[in-house]
Length: 111
Image 1: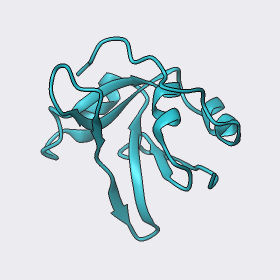
Image 2: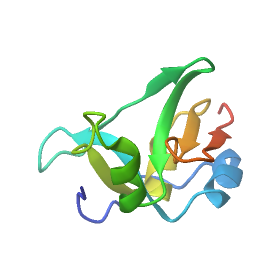
Image 3: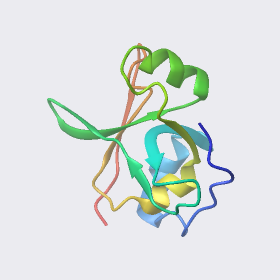
């Protein structure tokens, strides 16, 4: 589930600071690296009645519970939140713990 120490590629954009404060320091996302030496990551997104979103899980245990039976159980990648926010473009909608009783919706501002 982990690919080493994911250092931020860049600093978190200032407009994302509010979102940063709503997330833990590390999160689990549904993603895959191209290979063991890759610097490219493909993040899985989904869509609902409100449009596309990226599911974000607050920890590995929550990821396993919320993705059980989905077919994505083996695609969890632990990343530093700063890393995740540094590679997003703005305008994305994140859903923290989407399979929980109280998911948290975070809309990133457009850059």
